[in-house]
Length: 120
Length: 216
Image 1 (cartoon, rainbow over the protein chains, first blue to last red):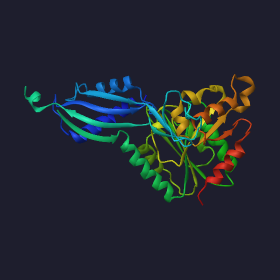
Image 2 (cartoon, each protein chain N blue to C red):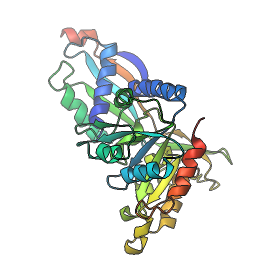
Image 3 (spheres, chains in turn orange, blue):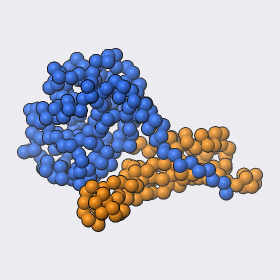
Image 4 (cartoon, rainbow over the protein chains, first blue to last red):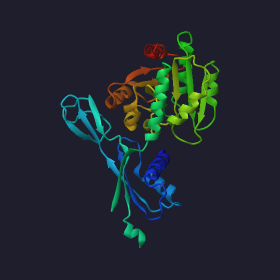
């Protein structure tokens, strides 16, 4: 259960871009989470809501995009998506593969409310 | 709608400290291993047997990570090696900053090998670089042979696999061949050792591998 510390790191990054957020300024935070990053999406959402609940970021939505595991075969060069944990090329069966996507854990974007909305 | 493009790794702070650790370890010519496993698979016992078998060949220091107690550090300290205990107070993994602080508390420079024993957990430690040269994952025969498939990230990130408690194979429903097969399906480059910390089977081969990695 390291989603809480991951949520705190995300919040830390948000504060670097929006140092003193007022209520209703940050609409959402977009995060990419690879399927191999050992993050439970529901748990991360829960932790983010829990640590922002009593702050001006209450209501800011954590939008999580789950990225599939993509591998590239060193033998036949084909790029494939894999679902099961056996890391072999579905095309030729070779197990000399490179993971090209699926381990990501990054903050992509912070979306702010339009100023007009803020004034309303 | 106003969007700020961020494109930053969530764990970048940890990664930056891990890189600093790596440079410090490199400068001191250390071979550093991050030992990861589920609780009770024998990380501390493996460290104890390794110290015992290599005491005339090279010197070892140990950083112990646990949620509570300094029991592991006390066990290792009985062998007369420098050891620092990190108590994570509930956190399920070690982070690079904790290792940096613990390393600063080791009072001697007279060692060539550093063991970092992570918190017993096959999930969370996989994502946190500590600055080690490599991760060693330990699975004991009592855990069953399906663990590599259930925790692929950990086995993918490790360089070596220890299959421990092989003396118990006659009593448990576990095939070491299947552990090997499953682990290699996730990470074909894993270096595999089969050990028993009770009768020391396989320990000499493991210690020989460590010796071959020492940067003199």
